[in-house]
Length: 213
Ligand SMILES: Cc1cc2nc3c(=O)[nH]c(=O)nc-3n(C[C@H](O)[C@H](O)[C@H](O)COP(=O)(O)O)c2cc1C
Image (cartoon, rainbow, N blue to C red; front, top):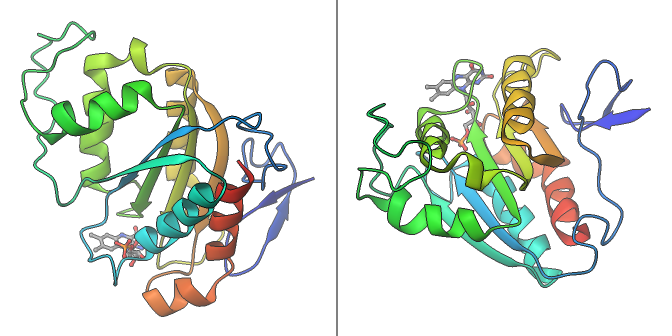
């Protein structure tokens, strides 16, 4: 039995219904007790005080830092970014023709990171355009970004059990293609406002995943 962190409570699903449902890792099981380099990519256009996904990623960061890990946070909605132009001048092995914050600030941190955390509001049942912009720019270093660990944090207004299905399928496919190891998924349904997310269980779950890495 696997616990899926959804709704403002926990829903129990079998492994076959949700292949990589979030579980709180056993203490030290992800890092093996070593200090990890973690990159958190926020992608909400809301302010730090308003955003529900940034609230959860901040709780994760708090937990990870308390366990001694090094966390770099990139705000995709505030930095200068450009979508992949598909020119293929990188040959999927960098550098990118865009001389922007993705290339200069984020990519060097991602390349040396052990763990990437993707944080997004649910937008029309997928990730935000701000996050998709970053994901498409993986193209310039696809091979070099293989073999990372990953976590997804998503929040949504809707609380139906199918709310995160499409994003979950996309994330799991991305993990497979990038040859990542998924180590946590937080599907914050019913979290359409700051007060809702703060009164949900997801904050504690995010913090615990971070502190248990
Ligand atoms: C453009 C847009 C699209 C949205 N699409 C969805 C959606 O498909 N399903 C849903 O449940 N909520 C949707 N929402 C609500 C947000 O996912 C929700 O308010 C979330 O908590 C926002 O997170 P943030 O504060 O971190 O940006 C949408 C909001 C916006 C602005």
